[in-house]
Length: 153
Ligand SMILES: CCCCCCCCCCCCCCCC(=O)SCCNC(=O)CCNC(=O)[C@H](O)C(C)(C)COP(=O)(O)OP(=O)(O)OC[C@H]1O[C@@H](n2cnc3c(N)ncnc32)[C@H](O)[C@@H]1OP(=O)(O)O
Image (cartoon, rainbow, N blue to C red; front, side, top):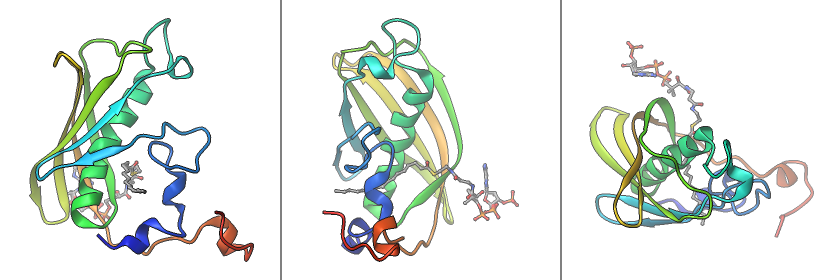
């Protein structure tokens, strides 16, 4: 991966994984040969109906774990072109889940991805099938750098 993508740019503001985004989920990942894994514990601020995580944020977990797999493998961003989600059981506030992203197949720059979210005992809570388009993108400088205010850290 081109490490310059990770420095001095806007990636640290990603809502799902950006370390500098105070409103973000701060997801962290483990990359294996064939999958990306993230562990996440929904908090009360992620709630929809009492005790369960908001479905839009469940979608973020799935989108991010699949996108991160491709980012790690390709060293380039990929944009979500399509995502279909099956919400099987609620994600409980306060209970850690395991998110997994895998590549299913690809044609050109379009990659079909599968994402799952399970309880630690393996119970499937939510899953997605998505299409992600790998793009050639030049890293964007952070807003402060662009404004000539110097590095943020
Ligand atoms: C320590 C620090 C670590 C830091 C570590 C950072 C890691 C960082 C990882 C971040 C991980 C983020 C994971 C979230 C990812 C987002 O959230 S991305 C944001 C949400 N998505 C978007 O904004 C995408 C918006 N859409 C687009 O930009 C464009 O439509 C696309 C998807 C790039 C495609 O555009 P395009 O390249 O112009 O392609 P286009 O000509 O439209 O289509 C070409 C072919 O592709 C196929 N295709 C295109 N769209 C579709 C579709 N929706 N469905 C099916 N087929 C399609 C078709 O075959 C199409 O051919 P035709 O049917 O048109 O003949």
